[in-house]
Image (cartoon, rainbow, N blue to C red; front, side):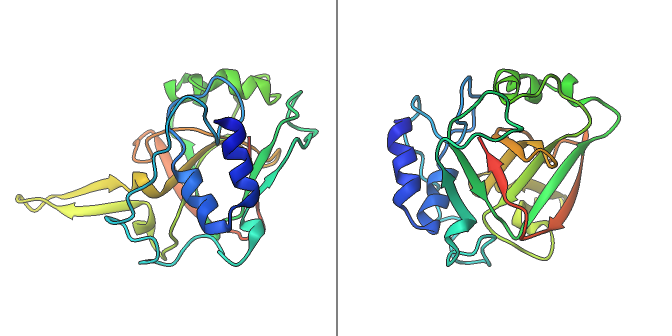
Length: 203
């Protein structure tokens, strides 16, 4: 399945690459690359409940470099790993930083410790970040958060899980893995960034 998915990333257009990426499983990966899987079936997002083109997209579908596969490239920062990486160039992304705790104390980070070490991280320090990239782009946080009012008048917040890409890595080294974490976790701060020139290198 890994070889099939990698081949698809080479030949598909940007729109289909995004759908393929969003169909990747969210569980922890023991080996790289994290953006493909040979253990889980395809899980295509149900865009019927969140229409694909109903909102402004966070990626330029006319730019093939918006989602681009680099095969077997050796990054000097990525340890001994010499496999493929996927470059993502969104218009907007969110950085999540821990509040009053260390990342290495979070279970979400420990689940990915094997993959992190393969990419040359000797330890998880304050330079490591969680990042959320949405399929859509809005002026507020409605691209990642869905709000509903219940019968008591309380506002409930839900993450738009089907259209979110979550990463763990380092901005300066540009090393990222696909991971899962709760973006609504009160232990994490959240800040939005608009930077079309930064391409996340996902392993």
